[in-house]
Length: 112
Image (tube, rainbow, N blue to C red; front, side, top):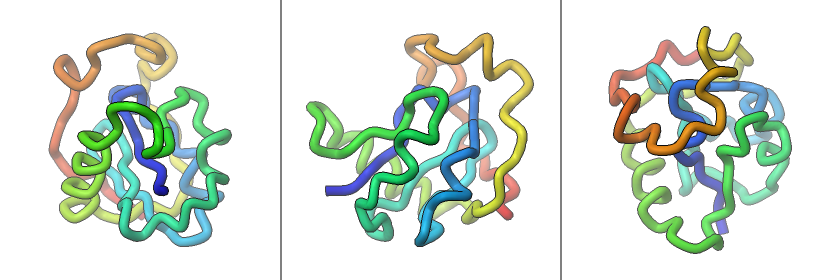
């Protein structure tokens, strides 16, 4: 099992999760985070830290696509280990559906 970040993170990018991760397996895009599924040790400490409920175990239905999505971008984006402020309109976009089609950017974040 591994944990992955889903589209609930897009356009919010809360980073509370990165500070509790013991193996630094989070990677930062311009408007979301991903978890490298090959680095995640399945401890689960990040899941309850996410205010957007964007971190899910890969054992849930239909997660295969998100595992590959997280793997792809974790290999392209910089590692993030330090908490940052969420995006300016995070509260307004939290819980919105269809965010991957509307808002996703493959541009790397700053990391750090």
